[in-house]
Structure formats: C-alpha cells, structure tokens
Image (cartoon, rainbow, N blue to C red):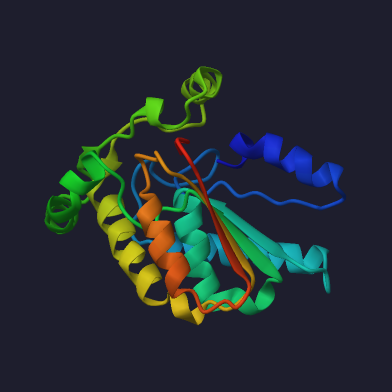
Length: 215
C-alpha cells in the first residue's frame, strides 16, 4: 500500500517533486479481496485512473513512474501500453521472475488451481525476506494495512503470466529506465531484472544490483 513508501515520498517532496501513490486493488484501503485478483488488468485500470488524475491536476508536467516488487511488475506492464505519458521510470526489486522458495513450487500448480479453485491460498511470503534490517521487518509485521496471508492461486497465476509477458515485450519499452535489485532477494529474482534489462529497447538504461541486499 502507498503508506509504506512515506519515507520515499518525503525524499521526493523535499526535493520539489509532487508524488502520488496508489493502494492497488485488494491492498491497503482499496476495495477488493486481499491476496486475490480476478484478472491482472484490474491493476492496470487502477493505474489508468491514477494517471488521469495526475495529468488533470498537473497538466504539461513531466511524469516519472516508480514501481517496487509487484508494483514493479504492474509498472512494467503499464509502460508497455502507456510509456508515452512518462519522461522516465524506475523499477525497484520488480517481480519480473519468480524468486526462490514457494513461488517456484507453485508455478505449475497455480495455473491449474486458478481455474478450479481461484481463491485457494497457495503461498505466503516470509516477512524475514523483506529486509536485512530487523527494524524494517518489525515495522512491516506491525502494519495493519499489510496483508500477510496466503496469495491465492488466481493471483499467483496472473502474476506468473504477466511476468512472461513483460519479458517478451521489454523491447517495446524505450524511455529512460533505472532498475535496482538486491542480489540476495528471495522474493523476486534479480536474474529476472537482468534479463528484462538486456531486452529493453531503451537507449538510456541502467541497472544496479546491490550485493547481499534483500527485497
């Protein structure tokens, strides 16, 4: 949810930027079932609504798009369709390839279960993998707006499908783009970011892999 990035927002606003954050469908204070989404396109609809609001309030102002984790995947898919609205973009630990552990184990099962029992919980993220900083992990666990239950079979299947689509369509993205990823990230694979980076059509692109860091 957007409130988790208050520190990031503070850094940007202190430098003179206006910043908007969105609680994606099923997250934070937004409507929807936690841990579930009927179709990934609902996230893109939310981004379209956010873009419309920002451009109405700040017309003719350069826009930058930032996405972290699943938000990085959403941003990548949104850029493939709407990059003309942005000056540049940055992806942080983007979910462009399944990480180690449960995500890989459910890769095949979730596709079948998505059709048969879409609401069935198939995996939960380990809070310890969020950060090497115990204080940040404790804050994550104490946040009442963070969903820490199981991800549904439908959401897992939708994300896996969109990860593949993002990789296939990376060459269509040509705006300046920065990717950052921790080398020890177990939630989203840094190799997915590296593969996406190599395929990007952007002439101005940069990737930073932070040695030993988590998500």
